[in-house]
Length: 328
Image (cartoon, rainbow, N blue to C red):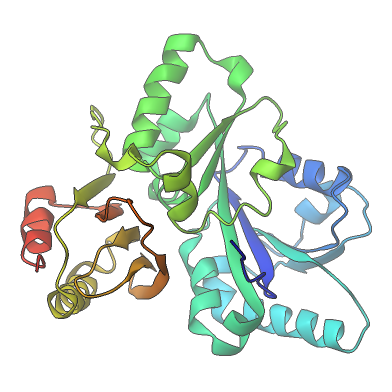
């Protein structure tokens, strides 16, 4: 089987609440031997960039945004930085294989990821590889109870680095793991102390879509999640073998995005659409939605739709009713 290698530059978005260990992970990435040249965009909140002083000396291109939170200035300044980087690369002044964006601990990662969808010029040059969220296992329960940003960072993650494991008892970890996997069942969890992770598990993993997760565990969406916390962010998943009607599906998604787009933090899936030979892969962030045909269904493969919605104020019964109406 041959795969067309993407020529786009992969982007890793590194997020996590204040004090979770993002800079520790960034330093680890900068100092380990990975044979890749990176452009690092560090976002500091406030006039003076402290993070840049904490980041070890390295040969990477480090760009600092310190006139506010990346998600507030993202439309303008992040665009500008990325365009400058590509221009410098085209002029032969710099070379880099990937971009890593570290957001401030108070940032919602969605607008950062949306930048690569909304700007056609940037989306032709870059692709989001993954959103990596670092979690402070010792204090995250409190952050999740009190801070919407902490919930959203977990909701958007493709990989969750469960850090500071040494500060937790086994039963505490078990309950935390259950809580987080209910909020985001599609993210891969890595368990660490001092962010000691194998870089292969956070870089170049192409886990911004569901394929990676379904390849690891084709039945993970069928697992039943039990939930005991009153978190605003929850997840709902559907698995259905009956094919979907393309027109009904289009109408439903348009309506859903208009009515619930602000509350739908992340949604993705693989769809079995009537009269379409390929699997249709879709994903969205808030109001932005993209769907495209993937590979053909394999011989003997069970054709089915598998969808996950992660967001706030999700009415599972109503969502399921609307989904069922899309069956062919």
